[in-house]
Length: 258
Ligand code: NDP
Ligand code: 8X3
Image (cartoon, rainbow, N blue to C red; front, top):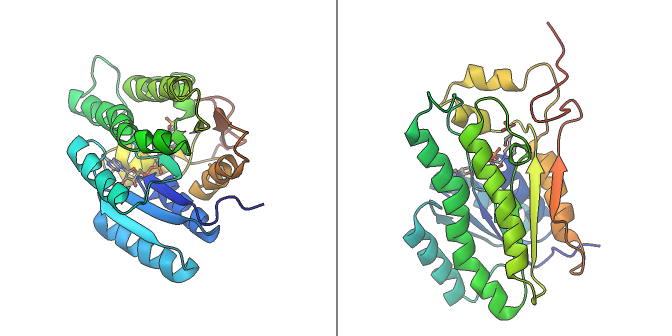
């Protein structure tokens, strides 16, 4: 059964990777979309593709989730147009750098904390009150296996994703007494632009992360998210961990040797 058709789904970080794959998947399922990210041109191309390909509406906005005023402005525009999302997918996020804590770059730390934690909070604080007011909605946070177990040099990224897990639990408690659902989908290795961003544009190093085993694709994760969102309203997946079969824990991976 398709419970997504005709719903309005807001995706942050929709310009690539998991966010873009979810946009394509939800559009194919007949949902209308609100797509936020910083790279406007990417969003514009995706919006045209989805509207032409699936006949759904895609409302785009260049929103940096770290910019609370911009998030509030974009939300106010939605509310004024009576377009309160049925589903909020808090996906925008990144890792920046991979270094020991005593050698790390505090600018990288700011980037991760400001995006993965404060950005998610900015968007949730803006959108959730409208869901609570109409007693309808589903928030899906993208966590990570990195939020379940630390790995060497993951430190601050790990901390942000442990934090996302705490926020998912806390948000679920806070919406008690309403039918609103809060879920977390926590992937392991997914081949997207994630590692290229982490390594500040070093494509070769990024490719190495996924060598010797078959990582998840963004579409694999979109499938899992579509499952979570499509469940009947009395069913909530609080936390779904999805990894490539070769990934045995956060940092033990069966890799073929050359
Ligand atoms: P990508 O780098 O491909 O996508 C990240 C998305 O986040 C982009 O659309 C980017 O858009 C957006 N984004 C980053 N910073 C901001 C910001 N300040 N404001 C708005 N949007 C922003 O990586 P993934 O698709 O892999 O990452 C998506 C989520 O999945 C992240 O939260 C990540 O932590 C998580 N994740 C990824 C895993 C992986 O192995 N790939 C595994 C587990 C979790 P733009 O640059 O245009 O703003
Ligand atoms: C992304 C997965 O293990 O590269 O959250 O940190 S990992």
